Structures are given as C-alpha cells and as structure tokens.
Length: 578
Image 1: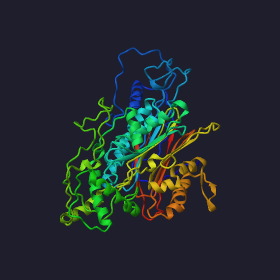
Image 2: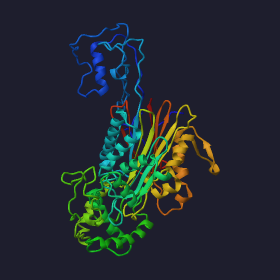
Image 3: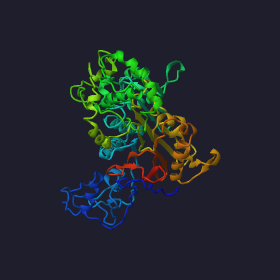
Image 4: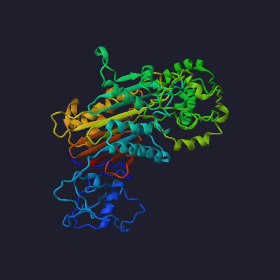
C-alpha cells in the first residue's frame, strides 16, 4: 500500500499522522530515568520538567543486571500533535517472572511483550460547521474518543467502544442524534441507529420514539439477534417505530417522555420551520401560530408532503431556508439536558409499569404558544444576519469505528433524521450497507484485512447508491469505477475515495436526476497487518473528525473544509502503527 498524503483541504489542526515509537539502546540508565519512564505511561504533565530531580525510593533494590540497558521512554511526533509513547519495559508489559531492577533493567533471558494496539475514530457529521462553533464540535469528538479509548484500554470490545463513543455524541445538544435531534412534522423525536460487529452482524432501530440513546437499543438488538428463539424463529436485527419502542421496554431500557429529548435549539428550529412551511405553500406570514392540543398534529402532517418535495430540510443541506423568520423566544425554557436535576429520569423501568408517553408530541411547546411574526420581522432583521454567520447547518448522522485489543473491528451510526420529516421515516443511520458497513476478514487471508465505513449526507441518495457498502468494498478491493462502469484496480486509496465520491455517488443516475443536492461525507478504516488506516472524504462544506490510538496521549481532531477553487471534494488520511 502506498503512503497517503492528506489532501490540501486538510487543515493543520492537530490531525497529524501517528508514528510508532522505536526502542533505543543508550547504555545504563539512571534511577531518575526509570521512574520517569513509569510516569510517562500515564502521561507527563505539561508543568513537569524533563530534568526535574527525583529521589530514589526508600526500599532496597532487587538484584540487578548492570549490563542490561533500558529502552528510551518516549518518541513523539515532530509537531507534538500526536505523540506516541513507547512503554516497553514498564511493569505493565513484562512477564510476571521478569525481575525489574531499580534502574529499569531486566533479565535479558526474558522476552518483553508489547501491548496490543487499539484505536477509535469519530465523526460528528458532514454539512456546514460554523467557525464560531468549531471548537464545540471538535470538543464533542474529542470527549467521545477519550471515553471510548478508556473502555478499549480496559479490555472491552469494539462494540462496547462504539456504543460509548456514540452515546457521548447523542447526549450533546449540538449534534443531531439522541437529545436535541430534529423534530418530525408533529414535533416527535424519532431516531435511527445501527451497530455492526467484526463479523458483519448488525443490530438497528429506526424511527424509534422515547429513547434517549438509540445506539444502546441497537446494541441490545444486536445481542439478542445472536440468541436462538423457540420453534426455530429467526430473531430480528432491525426494529422500527413502536415495535422498537416495545422491544426496548421489554429489554429493560427506560422510556422517556418526548419533551425530555427536545432541546431549546430543536424547539426553536421547529417553530421557525413551521412558519417557513406556511410561507412556502403561499399562505403568507401568519399573525400567530397557536398549538393547543394533539388535534393540531394531523393537519401538520399533511403539510409535510410539499416540504419533502422541495428538499428544504435534507441531510447535509442548510437546516432552514435563508428566508426563515427569527424564532420568537416566548416559549417556556426547557432544561438543556434530559439528565438535569429534578427530571426523575432513571436507568431502569418503573415498577408501576410503562411510563406515560402517549401525550401530545407538541406538549413541549406549552399549552398555548403565540408566535408573532409580522410585527417582529424588522426588529430582528439585522440580528438574524449576524446569527446566520454563527449558526450551524449540520443536520446529519454521527458515527464511530473502533478496533479492540483482539483486532476486532466494529462500526456504528446514529441520527435524529431530517427536520419536519414524515413520522416513521427511516434514515440511513438505521440501514446496514447505507449508513454503516463492515467487511469482515476472509478466513483464508493471513493478514486479516477488514474494512469499515460510515457515511453522512443526503440519506435518500445514500440509500440509492448503497454508499457505505460500496465505499468499504472499493477500499477493501482497491478498485475504482472505470470506463463503462468496469472496476479498475487502483492501489492509491486517495484516488479510490475521490472516485467513490464523484463517480459512484455524485454521478449516479439516481443522484444526478434528483431534485435535491447529493451531499456526502464518508469515514472509512482499513485494518491491516502493519497498521490501521483512516481515510475520509466529503463534498460538503465541512466534516468534523477525531481519532485516537491506544499509544496516543490525546485524540487528534480536525475540521476538514472544502477549499475554494478545488475539485469540490476534500479528503485526508492517517495511519496508526501496530
């Protein structure tokens, strides 16, 4: 495999290529060097001086071999953004019978073991991330990577790590997954999620209401699908809507009221989009928008047909037309998190039975909501233009890929779907081969190569092109689409990924002849015998990503952006040595 060069669009924001640390032999090492070596396994504090004198321990040293040198403690990247620490020789990586002396020496007859390498890769969706909120998006990715890596270092599976990473993103208001997701036409939060393990087995839920973390439900479905049922029945690996909700309750998951999943921003978008919808249908600005009961839901559902045809609220596109009216802040304040004190949310079902989730989905708007439009338009005109520069237009899927210490690979996706969608609409995040795909290693392949891909973008177009499966196959087989639709061998993964976005996706007849734009961002990971290779590409304005290997002190993050004057596709790559 030829080495990959990040595309010019890749910004130098800490997303450097990892390099494995090489052990060095320097001669007998001092007491101070050995103690610092053990400390480096946990990570040296920034305030710590490399030449800080450290006293020797009080206990008598064991027998030592003065002829055996100690390995160097670390070897970092030149830019310091993705340091890799070499912990050979530390107590955690020696055989139990090895005698370790005070100066770090070890009996040369004992063979040292290197810890297996694990890794996690995160994306927070493709679309437009405002520069004002860039730090918030990247910090969410960074936190997800850290939480996931703690599990991987503790020996947990890749499936556990993917679930943990996506749960962090689902709990963030800034993402369109779990809490804070886009609302359907009647104000309901319905989420999609998929989890695929290293064998290609999957669990997925689609359009499921009243679930705080849909990725956890997807994992529960995955686990149950591997358990046989009586009478040779086949256990499901995809459940949708109320069927998925009932399964969650029967499996011991807590159901939460719809309003607990609605963030303030999601509520404001919903009120604004309702007005946009009325104006788009030629009704003109209305003086008031009053929501009083669930009887208003059915008329609102009928309004959704034209909105879908207009493609106003599609993944990867702006979350509201430029002519949107500003949201009027007269609605009641909602807690920023469903886990806020006083909500009474529990992790186990109540003994009194199923929670009451049958109330009107619009109850989060209050018993009577008055939204005055015409009299406020001029007042907020200038403020609206300023807010537009700071707002995000990211209404899409989040995803994660992890590799555990056993070398097993898993991938997952989660999304709240498009705004003002039909009830029951299932998006790509719930569909294997469209939003998430894993190609398991072949049993006869000594290298054990496997590939995972997760996508983000216009869901209906990704379904048309089977996006994640096609991308994973392209990278696994190292091919691209050639003349006449024939597969052409291409050893350069950069060319493979660029060809996938342009030829397999954008030039697909179903995408070219669609009334909505074909937006996509893809993150793929290839596990090989010499390392883990991350590849990503997108034709949207931006794409937020993070990666972390078990030898990295901190996650590497990047907000990849399209460069003006280019070919309209931004991409990059990274390698983690094993």
